Amino acid sequence: LDQVIQQNASASEEMASTSEELSSQAEQLQDAISFFKLAGGQSATKKAAARPPVRIAHATKTSSARPAAKAGAASGTGVLLDMGSGKDKLDDEFEEY
Image (cartoon, rainbow, N blue to C red; front, side, top):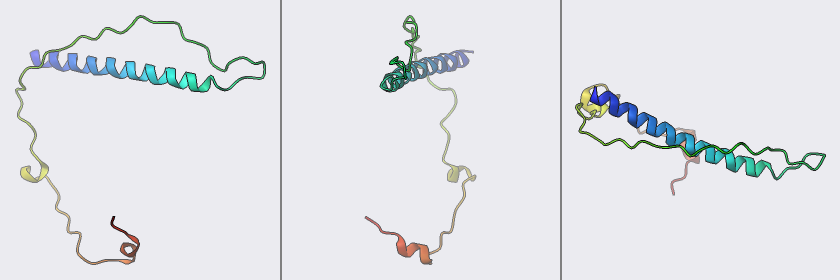
């Protein structure tokens, strides 16, 4: 139950942060669009109503009960590709800097 609560708190904090960032980007976009004027001399955008600031709840981190995931090759689920050493005509155009 504690783990689920921590995950929910983390997800809600991330969503609040994302929402705040998108709001900021939308405001910047509105400012950029306001450069353009309509035929009547009016601005193409309207200002949105002011909203109260978003309050973010900060969660404390606890140790994870689950061990970290291992690399695909170590768990036997990876794929080994044999790229070969032969060149084709597309390789002639490649330049390494």
